[in-house]
Image (cartoon, rainbow, N blue to C red; front, side):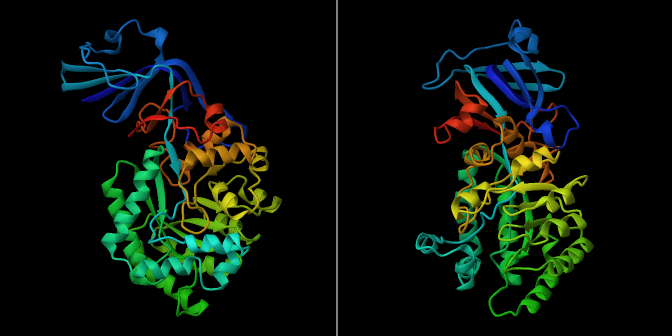
Length: 434
């Protein structure tokens, strides 16, 4: 058995009882906090936690200590515990002194497009010159430019480029992420993307989920109707590699009727929806998502009271993407209204080359507070447990809960949730645990 025990934790935050898969409304501010705490990990799972005052010695944790005589070169000292025999066999123990650092759940990013080729930094200059996202797309740029680059890139090169971004977000504290296809826009390109996502899943310790987003834009050389039929034709093959299906149901992209047809076919192959909705207009995407029992409806920069009412009493998670609002100058989602209505809410990065070129979930959390007026506790729920729910993994990760994966961030000493959002560019991570 491999074990780790973190001691002298200044604040252990994100505690949720077993069986709670998401937090709604006022409960989003209720993730528990334990001060001056310890936490025990066994074989990568959270075994137990409590207050330091409740343990008199390492022996009370069922360990015999054998401390390393060589101090660490930097940061808090790690104490090696070894050679302890139990009936289950050899135990390899590590005790980590948090020195007052905070321990929190690692981030769960439920909406990314981080498998892409090259860059769209040239469009950044178009944006600075005053062109809107829709105008860039109407000129044949945007998603179509990414599609062209992807088809010129080998699968191995696409994997290596994407892994650079994956390693980046893991180092920034993300331990669960959803990745979409959608830059292939024809069968060979879409399947290439889904194979790359499968390779990423096998290569990293994070939980990775794949979403088939063939309906991201109309591929070059197709009429709109031809491409909708092509997406439907791709579904049987995509279902062998994807966990979910998505449609960009919005102004200038795919209609509610298109979305209904695609999701109906996806359901035949066991693909539950995750919908792009209401980024550019009030599109009806939320309502069609609810009709098809979508796991999540994402973006929501432009919503009315009708969308809030449509989501009440459903299993669908609203997901807002403040990084996209920040980069494109779009309205921020009505987070406070959703919480006041008793709804759950997740926040995700939308990491992609055109409208949100960042996967920094700490920044997403800060935007949730600064621009959307969530409390730090509510924002934490939105980027951890509720984010995990929005990709179907909240029984496995997203909170400090006995039995869940020990996907955790250990901070440098002196941090708390408020400071995390307030000092939003100051380095804070000592270690990310998987």
